[in-house]
Image 1 (cartoon, rainbow, N blue to C red):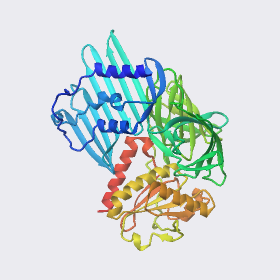
Image 2 (cartoon, rainbow, N blue to C red):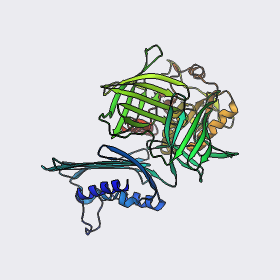
Image 3 (cartoon, rainbow, N blue to C red):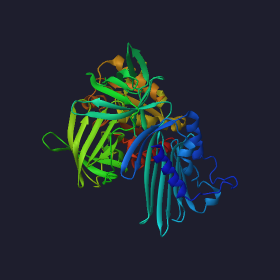
Length: 559
């Protein structure tokens, strides 16, 4: 593996044109205060981060774990690919936008003569959370395309270089950054199959994160009961009970208490396994795109029409399923032979999607938790429009938004309280058991930090699936503490169903999804009602557009 990576970096160096001579004078930035990738590699080197890698060489797929890595050397070619320089001001179109707390800079070449065709940087509080460089060089004899992406805890290097009839170099590396932790492959045994996930676990420090693509879901509330290690969710009423069988194997169960009936699934994890699903050869198919998807009832009737989003790099695939009431969050997997294999564990759900690839169709089975399964199909690259989330839930004629429910201290909070008088509001209908609600809560936390000081008030109404009020308030306290939110979360209903929830809020035409967000102006008139939540897993086209629209709306309401 080390020889493979070395060959890859050598190929970068031999086939790239340096952007500046090492003897060149100090670079004058076009935009001041923007960190470079060197600041990232310095940070990784300082913390002694390692890497679990997939690599593609020719048609072969290899995997390994680098126990020691020089990050400056790993990224050295792209460290020089910095066009944030004054001398490039006439060669690039520059976009500098801020949505919420995320600042995005994009440098796009004005013509094909530039080797660096694109450089994109995302900053949160001045730190790099995403970095992408695309390099391209074409001559009458050769063609070279290179791409580098850093995204949170992952990075990718992709090379395609050709000299027709003489030379071909295609290399791909996908790494997971490990900072003081070990990568594990976990499996949930549901009887008919074992659903795999990846986890970053440090048994010494008692930290446990389930990894889905670039997202990490924490299970860091630790206690030890005899020889059993208990890792409880940061956000949900679920936990892992595991025993170390040896230094590299954990065995136990995942327990989910979001409902009155406890669900428990056998779980096992193996250390230092750098993959979720195995794949040995590169696929011929590329499924990147949007695909109309059907879920079927037991008698073969279409129950639901949705949209499957897939991003494919070599054999690796990620994406989500978008529905009118929310997404299936971060799905990750591979294409193996003529099948696609996807799975996720979002803290409160375990999902598996498998399907055979048959021409322009996918035909497979969706499995959820220990027992549920459903057939599904998808038509590749077929257009499908979901209903507008703003037309599903409506306020009834001659009605107004009204509520009065207890907070975590047992105090009744009403929309008529003086605190809310004359202020725009967001009323979120949610559940502490709901992963889409978690995504919405993180968005609302961001909104509160920006527009709370300007007068925006946020209140969440919690609809619990359990019947125990004491446990319900424990869930609310955990939800607020783990997210660090300041706005009140009120207990609206126990043993909740959508019909029972509607009884609590009769001014609506119904409750169709958790979450549902009701936006009110300063007079507490309804401005918009947004049903469901398609979050970060749906990608920039959906989630970033939503954030920009609704943060813009909050800005208008607080003026």
